[in-house]
Length: 91
Image (cartoon, rainbow, N blue to C red; front, side, top):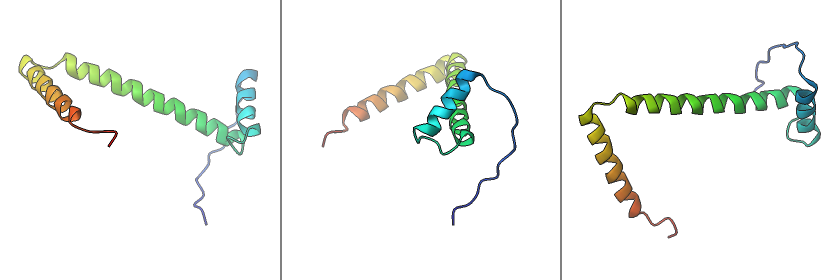
């Protein structure tokens, strides 16, 4: 028997456009309910937020490196590039 996820009651209004979007997800079979369609849309939004956070944090990391740490990162990138050149992805 599948484990039932705890659900929270949410009572709100959405734009006509958003409602049509969610309803289309249900009609097309991509979601079994409006709630599931909303959960999936929010999951994608959270994933995008996480990617943006990672990109920002990565940029900040490299911007704040010392010259010695930058040289080490550069050497690691070169070594990784050479190692990947040896990988036969087709075979």
